[in-house]
Image (cartoon, rainbow, N blue to C red):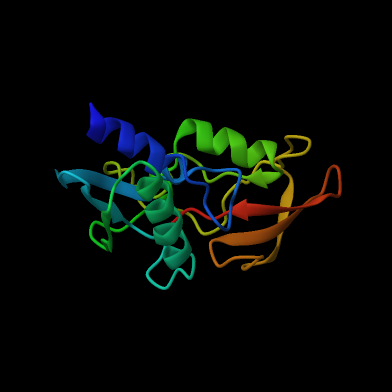
Amino acid sequence: MLEARLRRIAGAVPDPELPMLSLDELGVLRGLRLLGPGRVDVELTPTYTGCPAVATMASDITDRLREQGMAEVAVRTVLAPAWSTDAISAEGRRKLAEAGIAPPRPGATGRAGDRGPVSLELSVRCPHCGSLDTTLLNRFSSTACKSLRRCESCREPFDHFKEL
C-alpha cells in the first residue's frame, strides 16, 4: 500500500540532532495520511515544544516525499498528546547506547500506565562499561533533552537522554 510505503520513507528520515536515530525510532512521526493523488499529510510531535529541529525534520520529510512523486506535502506539528521518551523504540534505545548516549529507561515517565512518581535521581547505566555508579555533572548537555554524566568506574563522561 502506498500510504504504508510513504510512512516508512518519512519514518526513515534521520533526526537532525541525533542522526543515529530515524524519526520513527525516536517516536516523533505521529502519522501520515494520503489525501489524494500526490497529496499527503504528515504529523510530527517534537520532543519538546520549542524544539529547533522541527523545521529541519519537516523539510527533510517534504524532500523525501516529493522524491516519491508527492506534489503537496503538509507537515503539521501536533503537541497533544505530548511526546515522551516512552515513544523511543527498543531499536532506538539500542542505537543511542551504541553511540555512547545512555538511553532513557523504558516506562520511566509513567505515561504508558500508572507506574507512580519518577525519582529525580535515577540510576543511569554507563553506555561504555555498564556501571550504575554514575554522577550527574550538568542537567543539560549538547541539547536540552540530554544531561551530562560521568561514570565513576571507567571515568568516562557521557550524555544521558533524559526521561521526559
